[in-house]
Image (cartoon, rainbow, N blue to C red):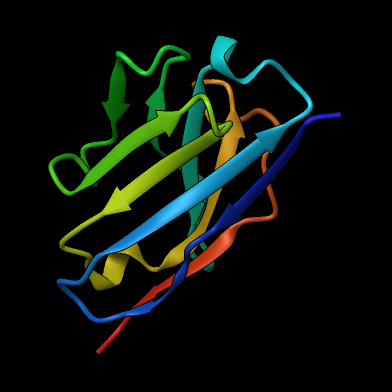
Length: 116
């Protein structure tokens, strides 16, 4: 059974940074692409980043490009999202997902709130 657990969210001031983690189990991690998506209150789910199984290729939504960095440690079955220069509009529940599109199995999410 696929199991994804996100962590690392919290309250941060605008301009601050957070690093999210997602630990996976139940599948062969290094053979699978992973992605991050987010959902703000009252808004649709937004795909924000993906990384292929080997970790050698990544992609980002324009809304986070240059501020967020996705990475993975296949030895730890973990994918990360480093978020810098956070803005109030980044406030959302963040989920990691199996696959590159963000519509696969997701974890329970971790809340990120950017506020002064």
